[in-house]
Amino acid sequence: MRVESTWRLREAARCFHSGGLIAYPTEAVYGLGCDPLDAQAVYRLLALKQRPVEKGLILIAADYQQLAPFVAPIDEDRLQTALDSWPGPNTWLLPAADGVPRWLTGNHDTLAVRVTAHPLAAALSRVCESPLVSTSANEAGQPPFRGALGVRLRFRAGLDLVVSGAVGGDGAPSRIRDLLTGSVIRP
Image (cartoon, rainbow, N blue to C red; front, side, top):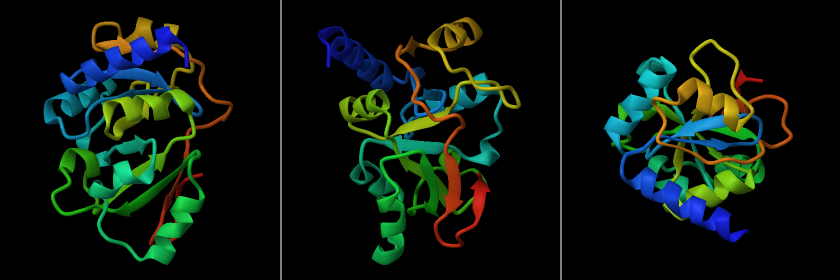
């Protein structure tokens, strides 16, 4: 990783830990994120996107260990299905651990989680030592941005930092499936 990238990631981690909103590239689109345990930051993000809290949010991480505290115990064989699909553009609905805030789960008993395959998003999660809230960089109902310039222009007043980089080669946002029922929420 280049020195400037390392410096930019450290700057992003400082922003993350001080309650900031960050935009960053993911497998298919730019994501908007923040500290999942910072209620004020999450509600700022929801207002920026005009997204209702009832829908819930996705957490991305560099590895499953970062997500484990947010997930209720689950049968290892069943969990292996999700683990085998990661890292990659596969988001799974898993039972939320007791105490996971409603601003993450919305009106659900599950939490949407993914171990990202995007190297910059994974590095950001590692340097923050935390999973990241990850929602597409767009207002609700609008197409998501695939480049830093569009994100900067649209969200300039609401974002604290944009981590520039290329999005991955996936043509669509991650697939979302419920691990317990097998149902596909988003193809």
